[in-house]
Amino acid sequence: MDLGFEKVVFQLDVKTVVSDVSSLDNDVTEYGSIIDRCRDLLSSKPDFSVSFSRRLANEVAYVLAREARFQAHPTFFSDIPSCIFSLMQLMCTELHG
Image (cartoon, rainbow, N blue to C red; front, top):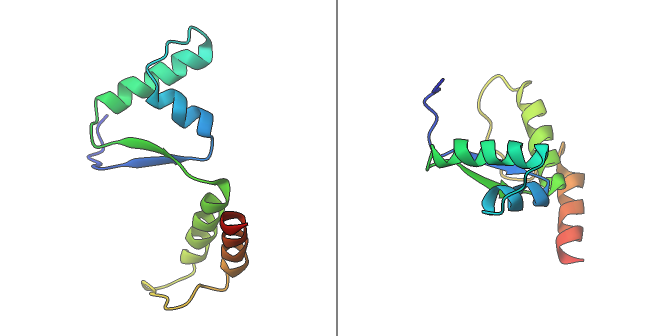
């Protein structure tokens, strides 16, 4: 079933899975079979990719998506929205130690 998506990036917060999907190593376990299937699907869609994203970044995206449900119209922010301000501070602290 082709939904017509183009240039899709799957962002995962499990570095091992991202590495395994990108690798050519052969794994004969059930996990390896799942990884092989992912590779097959990705190879059939050259515009699709897998990348690593920190879990905290996923949390920011989740909170923004949840808040967007309550917006009647598209909203542009010139400042960091209050719903993610503390998460953004935490991300900056983690990145810059």
